[in-house]
Image (cartoon, rainbow, N blue to C red; front, side, top):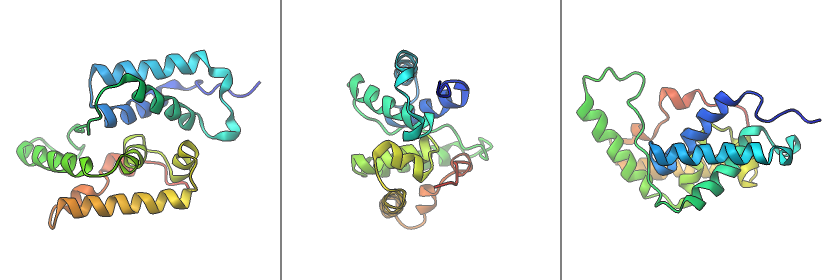
Length: 175
């Protein structure tokens, strides 16, 4: 019998919720979709094929379909304050998040999906490639281009907002 893809659900739940919230915003709708993902995963657990990728890639495939089925307009989620923020500069943090949200909204759907998988769910290029059926090198190039477009949209002096935060830098470095 293959290894249970849901044997350690807590980290998977956090990553799936982050991915869903990146698309829909934080809150009840994202929680409902995340619950739906795991209900489907439990129901169709036998369909998981470890040869096709890690459990997170399988779950994000389910999440992508669940987001589409929810029929809610896509949003660019505002993340919580960065871990290094001390709250003293709330106005600046809010403005930076708003500018980043506007810049993300200027990306096309595929670019937002790639950014969500890399920085929302913390997937490696290899994992993103497995979900989207792309070569990991193509994923790297597409993410590089999406970040360049974000930097351009943010303008001079604000491009650092397009860089990953401390939280997103902890994403797996593997390919």
